[in-house]
Image (cartoon, rainbow, N blue to C red; front, side):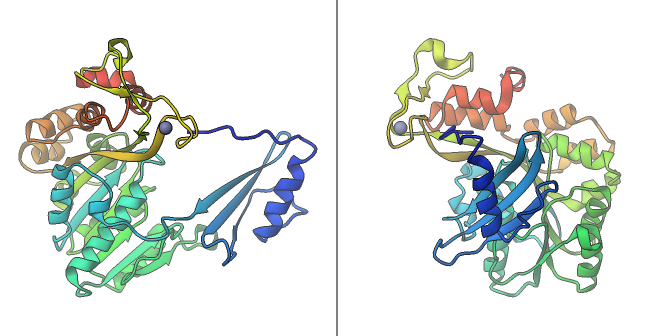
Length: 344
Ligand SMILES: [Zn+2]
């Protein structure tokens, strides 16, 4: 969520951008092309990535801070519901197949993928050869060889994956399956004795299945290659200043109880502090697997998965509301009303 903090006068703005560009080692005299760089300063204690883009009234600069969380979290630290966390810790012991984390941008997919890799490496006590292909590498994973793809230099994810497979690692993380070729190679690896962890952009676990089929992954490969798909979202966690909600503040959600945001100094008046994940885990067993094989539509696959015991993500979000972890307003902001109405 954007928090407007200050407005910089137009006469000063270009100087701020120019200074950032100097620090990040970018070309200050080029204001007509996008640029990307890093500010590496040991005194900062964390990494700063700067990207610039020409806009109508001058350059726009975006600064990303890779601070604090410069270590890979453990699965148990991510705060998933016990049902999901428990299944994850069993699935990472598998020797082959595909684990997919899906969700929109900013839903914490990469953090979960890293946590899975850490779990896999630690459980095997160094006994499994593990590698990643990323674009870009975001964090260093102990015990894993990490490769950064570079599409500009004709070293894209799918090309890199072909090379990596010749080295025959046992566990592979593919940063994100963005194109059909990468997805096909990743599934090929998953059905030929590799444990593959990857992320994929989709709205729900069932939608991910149908989108992968649309990308050309044959149904038999989806059925036999897939171990599980987790769809996740991050909800803002209510600050300790939250208040019990009046009946009218429940946003029409089917909950008995809720708390709402207020705002204090500790949360900069936003009412929220930190985030909590919610997730659903779909496994292609039984009826769900048969539905995938016959290319059944996403809604039907989802319904079958729920019948088979999947706790849908919106239900977990409602549980978070009733537990006072987040507010009805936040759930509606993240999921929209339509999906929740269908859910209830
Ligand atoms: Zn507060």
